[in-house]
Length: 154
Image 1: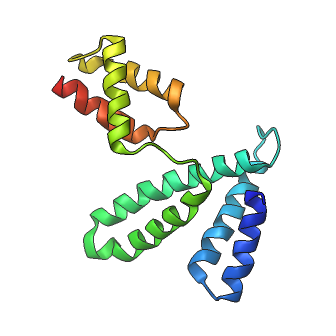
Image 2: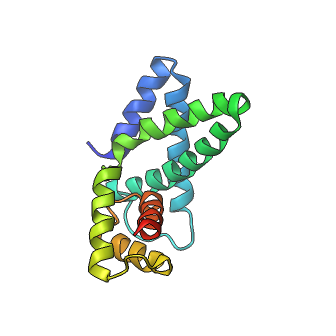
């Protein structure tokens, strides 16, 4: 079953169950897909890879917004929880990323390979090296943070 078919089934099920949160997030992804398809520079097929790209982009934006709402404390708690649900729910259609420990091991190995230990100015070079070679496995913001930490501490 394709992601598009899964989302259509999820939407039907959410509507039958009167699950507004699931219904709304699936509809939002459908809107994001339609918007992406209508862009002048759109080329290619609307396949699982396209859906994963759209979902990943949306999840990244919502995760950033969730963190901002969480910083507001009680005022932003309801919205932060809504966005956390959306991120968790949609993550099942995304490739799994390495956790912080595994990412740190890769960063340490890359710093050693590039001879960048202790050189804080090399952060972009190390991050770029890792993202170019392993971007499907890595969370870019996590890599950037760990590279900064390791170069400051090294």
